[in-house]
Length: 374
Ligand code: COA
Image (cartoon, rainbow, N blue to C red; front, side, top):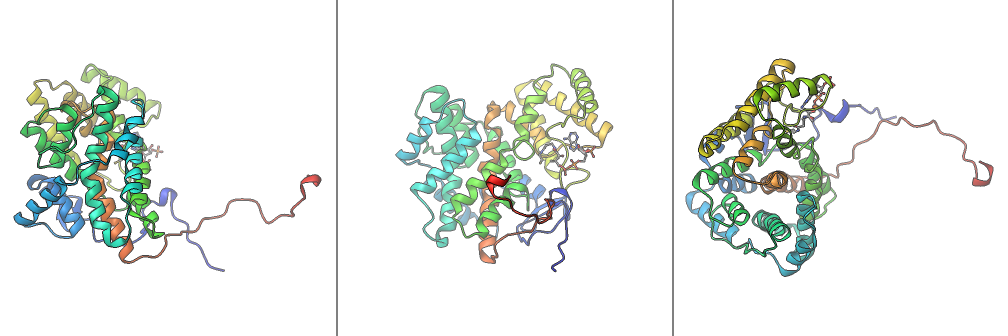
């Protein structure tokens, strides 16, 4: 009999495969992409530079980056059939469902004919995702059919431009670069693992990414930044935040944006996005939400030794840039697509179908009885 080893709940701490893409919690400040510390990347690189690193394996030269930005710019347009589908999705839909449908529909229209097209298709999705979410959002909420082929150089600027109908200020473009860099890749998290499981069946890229979007949607994963916003906007002062938080902890409620399955003392991404949130607060001349967030961070650490993960200060940062709360998690998709795609490529390059076993907890073998004898 084959002896089966049973891991802890949620497969915590189990090695489920190999990757050369990132390390979480074991080197540098706690997160590296292809050997580079995320702090160096977030401080020095555009998102497109990091997307190139993740997808192509090396940081681009200036010429390669210019070419890559140019390529992505040409891929922003949406086919008429996809626009029609987006126009039929109601304003009440969850934007993550829109992303999921948009990705799936594009797979119907421009599917991956062979794995030789994987990089081309990943770049197409990278360029198209901001267009998909903004086209739906502006049509369903403002009744306008926007032009998705803007002249903005970066994905972040392109997104803000379509959303707000004006070119974004430099500070906002910088925050988007940093935010997208921070969200780009994170080893075997739930959505990436979903993508790899799907890829291991030799399915197509669009199916793998559609599944990953569905997984990221949950509040225990990507949805935490929206949940964090819904929490902090309820408070009108830091003192009220502290009082309410203490009550929630007493009632054993989960506070979204805190804790992590792998990091034990801090999330390296938090310090960076927190810095941007503070800068944005001073730029708008209203730091209430930032101060409330800082108080929540202090209370959670004092009471539970729980620290902010990447999502918590993203909530105030995005809010200061006037991004509607329900679009927070789709921004995560726009970025994490790079990590998902690179993991899919990696899985395909050395594939064996992912098929773990289960510990059986059901009844012993028993006698079958025909329906008329039960
Ligand atoms: N608020 C309150 N308590 C929390 C908490 C939070 N955000 N995160 C963890 N805890 C508590 C757990 O309830 C558990 O308490 P218990 O031992 O009394 O049951 C303890 O801390 C240990 O945490 P655990 O649930 O084992 O961590 P995990 O690895 O299973 O889950 C998360 C990790 C991220 C899913 C979890 O921290 C969480 O749900 N956070 C909120 C959602 C979130 O921000 N997700 C984004 C992740 S990047």
